[in-house]
Length: 111
Image (cartoon, rainbow, N blue to C red; front, side, top):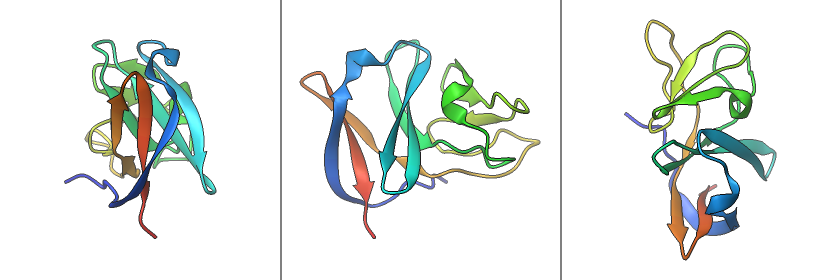
């Protein structure tokens, strides 16, 4: 099950092409750091930029497929669901993302 949040509004965060393949960019939504990822096959994902283990910056991790490995202790997080890959446990918030006319939009959660 995903921890995806209900959307209040969509906000533009920049050109989708500005995120290199298999890399991330960080934006802030209120006080929350959100990591926007682009996979090798040009899929985009947005998750909270905080590993559920020790709070490491997932945006600095290595992207492989639709997963990212935390740079601190190598926990692997599913970009689609925000879940840690077993045997590790924990989740991070997942934000909906879409691309319109080359612009990346992220869904801002309802309060």
